[in-house]
Length: 130
Image (cartoon, rainbow, N blue to C red; front, side, top):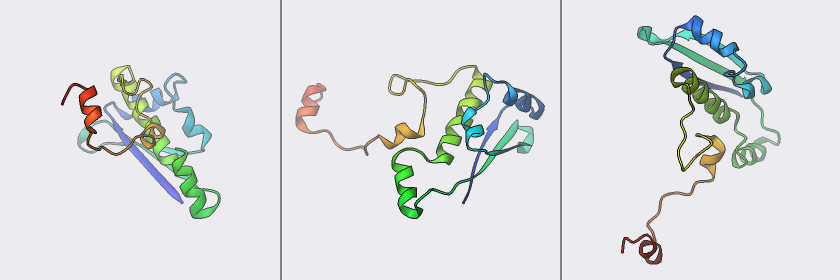
């Protein structure tokens, strides 16, 4: 199965390719999974598109694919994480973090979240919103 991830970086193509080679910025995960990376000019002269194509066959068919998803081992999601981190470092010099996710946005962390639900009475009282 072919998976594709892409992001646009607001820098000229030659600069993005040079920065991609910088060991401090280069997404190591994409080397580990043997991804094919291409750089294309973004439409309207708006930077550079980075395209990542990877082949992925989850072992064990549908069951293996479900297990990989639950464990956070989805290659496309991890590739997108790496692309976002590269974009943030190149464009702003930092990786965006918050108190809720001090390590930055990660696909594995999203799987741990529960759907939004109303608070119970005791939770509302504890939050001082009763």
